[in-house]
Image (cartoon, rainbow, N blue to C red; front, side, top):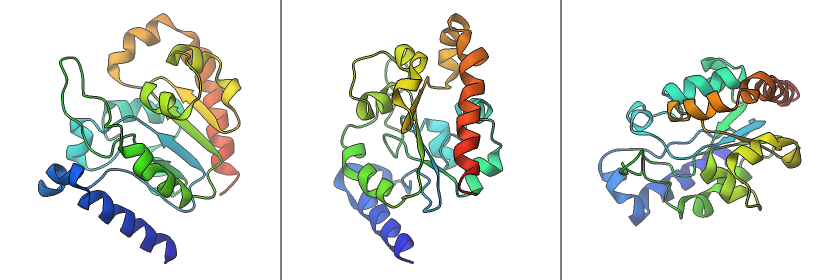
Amino acid sequence: MVFQEKLVTIKQEICQDPRNQTYTAAGLAPLFQVDEQASLLIIGQAPGIKTQEAGQCFRDRSGDRLRDWLGVGEEEFYESGQIALLPMDFYYPGKAKSGDLPPRPFVAPSWHPRLIELMPKIRLTLLVGQYAQDYYLADKRSVTERVACYHDYLPDYVPLVHPSPRNNLWLAKHPWFEAEFIPQLQSLVRENLVRTS
């Protein structure tokens, strides 16, 4: 019960934070997936509008592609208790001129450490997209450089390009990602999921 009590307390604090009042007043809950048995943590960017409407992280085309990349199905992704999902913002931040607004910068430092502390069995963290990588990795590399040199961040992290359809051109320009990187990623994911099952 200690885990659940702490989780409820953190969720209440997020909802009551004045900076989140617009979302709370609209009846929107913060989006993340935390389990004390989780061995794999996925840190993404911010929920898109479709994801927020669905009330579940990665419940969109980006999520479909991400699950394909990882080699896991929806049930394992959402219901196994082994995969945790922690966006850089827990709410849809709004629309920009091109795409969505970036995650609000106060969210990760305010709540990520406390939520991660609830998951002592995490073995591997996937950093999806530039915002997660810029926050958690102490270097100035581009997303492409980080993904290409992912071995540099093991055993703690694996950087990933965001699975958004907006990155189709990037994928076309970097065929090594799906041909070489994805099979290695799937092996890492399977190893870290199996080791705690």
